[in-house]
Length: 469
Ligand SMILES: Cc1cc2nc3c(=O)[nH]c(=O)nc-3n(C[C@H](O)[C@H](O)[C@H](O)COP(=O)(O)OP(=O)(O)OC[C@H]3O[C@@H](n4cnc5c(N)ncnc54)[C@H](O)[C@@H]3O)c2cc1C
Image 1 (tube, rainbow, N blue to C red):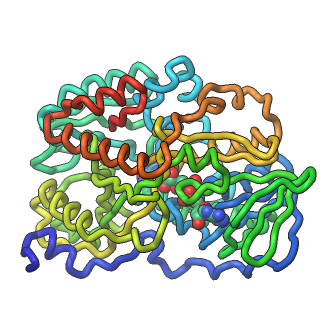
Image 2: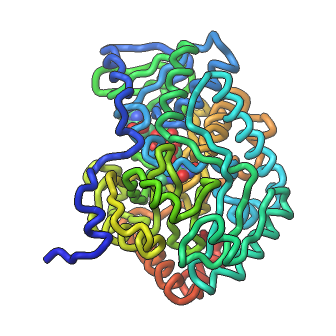
Image 3: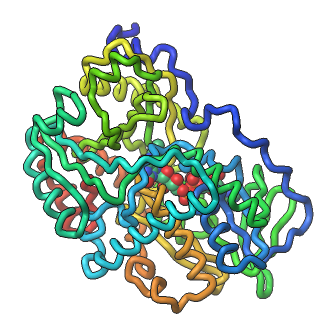
């Protein structure tokens, strides 16, 4: 029996595809990788933001370096093509998480993040990439009374560390975005903006092409191994031999054991509405087009697109046993229905709006909720993975770290605790599934009980493993 609710009606015609990839100017796939042996100075595995930035920065540092990218699918078909497009300067998944895990380095990590953010904007200009960047900041809102006191703390913390952050009361936040559910907010106006994720990725791809990087799509690396003083990267049709390799495979199965230990893959789901009519658009205010997130542990993120649709995602972070990335997981009707109902709870005045797109994507999380870096094969292989939900900007820095670990491992940045230390490893299955499932349930319970974290989350907090949005 289908239940007739505003959410179900709105979802009825939503297509199972990624809004950002639904465009007519996607490039043709690159020619298949040559069979036999390909030689290169640097081989990058993965054609998302990390891989593309690694290739671009490698060429910027040394234009003569011969760089190859192997992408197992198409460029931007991983998380980089299906995210919310929040461009946040933080490299530590937010200030609070950075302070929690790297209190002694937080000033330095903030400076690194801001520098990296400026570097992205400079690169957009330099390579003429129109990523539809909007310097909107982010508005974090309270939708339940228990979340309101935390807003003042959050605003004060952000201001103390140099951000332009203002606290908004109920009337002020509703003057920005009109929802009867909003009880207050913190608007961080500095160092956060919005982009079109696929426009960014395709622009980076063009920049890499122009710099002479050879990009091979549908070229999945199956194995990496030492080959004398080089590294051998096998694909189904041949192999690459390179002096160095960067693994930029994020949530996909890691080709080396340290990545598999560090990263757990969870799925996050997103809906996009049809373009709002003028009356619908006027009914929600939102003139300054901020990116929004609510402040529950299971939080939603939402934003406007260039053509005034609303992108609405998050809440459920689903872990599937074994943690594999698979197209089958791009859809999850139960989560989509829940998201649709929650949307009309937030914006009842939009009843009648229809969703046109629905999709899911893999997020690489670590137990410290920010990236993990490392090397293998006697320093000839480096990786940067695990940005959790905040990798659109951090991936450029991650790529730079991986390059530094290959080229100059004694450089300052390589000596940061953030770079040298490893997150607490996830156990193998079935313990991994059990631990993550217990934690997800405890987080949902905490949200139902006004944020009270309970015994399991308190234990994780004491061990430095607790998630708090
Ligand atoms: C739904 C969703 C919403 C998100 N929202 C935001 C947001 O608003 N802001 C934000 O900052 N972050 C967000 N993120 C996270 C962000 O998208 C990622 O952190 C970022 O895209 C990671 O880039 P990446 O290049 O490391 O990984 P990916 O983009 O996943 O790229 C990895 C690539 O490696 C390829 N690959 C994997 N294995 C192999 C192999 N063996 N051989 C060859 N190729 C291989 C894959 O095909 C893939 O293309 C979101 C993620 C999701 C899923």
